[in-house]
Image (cartoon, rainbow, N blue to C red; front, top):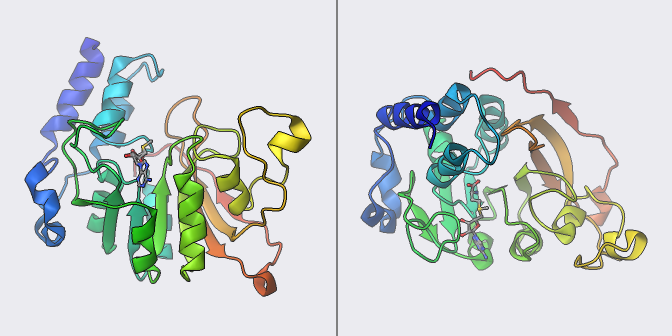
Length: 266
Ligand SMILES: C[S@@+](CC[C@H](N)C(=O)[O-])C[C@H]1O[C@@H](n2cnc3c(N)ncnc32)[C@H](O)[C@@H]1O
């Protein structure tokens, strides 16, 4: 760890109250008693690091400690404005986005298949959570269709993110927000992006891309209505995009509005 990066991380640690103890995550009601986080330690630490390349171990440590997606103020504002009935987050990792949204006044229920710090989590084993993240898989989101579904950096080329979109739609969910990269990027698989209406071609049949599922015949279940650029890390092209459910009768070919992010910490 570089001295510069280490000091950025240390400064971030000093802006605690910080993460919550792992035993607290078993009690969902605990989020009502969470101390207020001062600022956005991940965003502030990132602003202090000169070398933001993925090879810098500090960047890797920040991701492990906080999140893959960087919750910028415009993204948090967009999500809060689009979720008056609250959020159900799946694949929440450490719950860092959940914590900041909770502080912004959003009612958040967060799930992960392997809530940190459990050792099975391939990304966050040993990381203390920032919010009570409950154990749960795709099936649990069907209990929360009154809320907006949030997925941030869903795992690349795994099937659960697409499964979540299909299950939430079938259960009657109305709205989804996704933070991550578009088709061919580091988040989700081609089925996921087809269901979101962001990938019009079958990469397997039309472009001959190996190791990607055939998406011929998959119709979009969701349609983008608004978005902001996130600008997580150099070389990462993240957007925060809100989608509304598509039923055949409601499929309108509206273009979404995308606001550029100015880079201000807010
Ligand atoms: C790349 S991480 C992103 C975590 C977090 N959203 C972030 O931005 O840091 C993907 C997360 O999805 C979780 N996950 C993997 N399979 C899952 C499943 N079937 N249901 C729910 N969560 C799952 C992993 O445990 C991991 O925490």
